Image 1 (tube, rainbow, N blue to C red):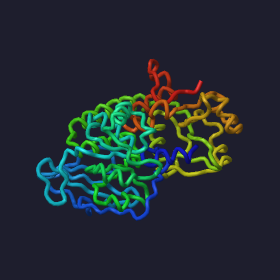
Image 2 (cartoon, rainbow, N blue to C red):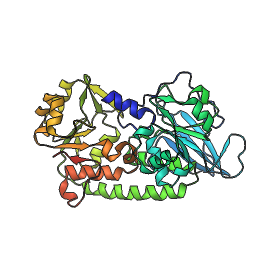
Image 3 (cartoon, helix red, strand yellow):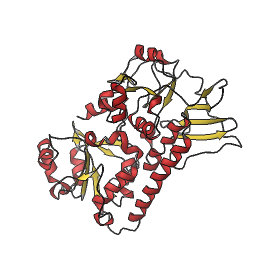
Image 4 (cartoon, rainbow, N blue to C red):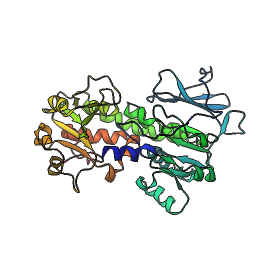
Amino acid sequence: MRNKLIRRLSVGLLPLLVPLMMIFDGCHYANPSIKHASKPTADSSSLLSYAKGFAIFHEKHQTRVVVYDPWQKGKVLAQYYLVKGRPGKGQIHIPLNKAAVFSATQLDALDRLDLLSHVMGVSEATYIKNKSVQKLLKQHKITELAASENYYIEKIIEKAPQAIFFSPYQGHQSLPTALSSILAIPYLDFMESSPLGRAEWIKFTAAFFGKQALADSLFNRVEKQYNALLQLTDSVSYRPTVFSDKYFNGQWYIAGGRSYIARLFRDAGADYIWKDNKQRGSFPLDFETVFTKAQHADFWRIVGTFGAKPSYTALASENKLYTNFKAYRLHHILYCDPEATAYFETSPLEPQEILADFIKAFHPGLLPHYKPHYYKILP
């Protein structure tokens, strides 16, 4: 199940806890817009508050977008110089009118920015939940250009996108060599550990389409709602304990104490039992180690599908040892069905919805009339 999910997410959908698994040989950046970082000039100004993976600077006659390498601290992965007028050497004219987008989260950003008409190609079309994108696929206005960890090289060359937005992973940070003439733009929102930082990547997308003002407005609304919810849990005296995910194929992948989901647990007024761990990503443990630490935890968060209809019985049929967890016995499983909710596509841009869902579970009295969107207590 987990390997299948990784393959599904590798080119199209956004992973939350595991790295992308696209493998291409001979990849490199061969792009005039990708250069070593230059220092901000006196007239430049950053436009971000939370995201750490990129920066936007307004400079004289151009906007500079920098993507930082999340695997090499202090290094720059890519840099772009955007202009609305006639581009000079190394500059890119915006707005882009013909882009291929291989991140489902970024497709959602483009939808929110009313820019789907600028998208001509996607990956993993079968798994995209966005109804507008599916309609454009049926109308042949958008074409599937990648799937199952493979780029459709000939089709991409034929369709000739101005740029390809893609999700790199460590060791494979660029497009195949055959596509080196096409502008490659890495999209690394999934590396952010801050929920608002991940949502702020809508500004990255907007920069290439001249929609910065709208992106700022959309993000400001999310930020305001998130921080209002955060104030509800600031002074809670009781923080229920919580752990996450499931055992699979001999390992239990645990979200690090500095991860995205750990931050959401904390902000929702919960006590994540691995909060003292220093990792931002996930790490594997055996069942016995997890059980020893998590057996008395109050809540258990699960994202995934099990059985025709998710239930405690269906979960126990996977592994009878699950019934020994306190959270199982109390029916305190906080469950999200990613297929039904389009979780991987839409939730990164609306962390306030996840936060509200968690608060509803951990402290129901704080949101008595709220109806959960992504996560619900499994009855």
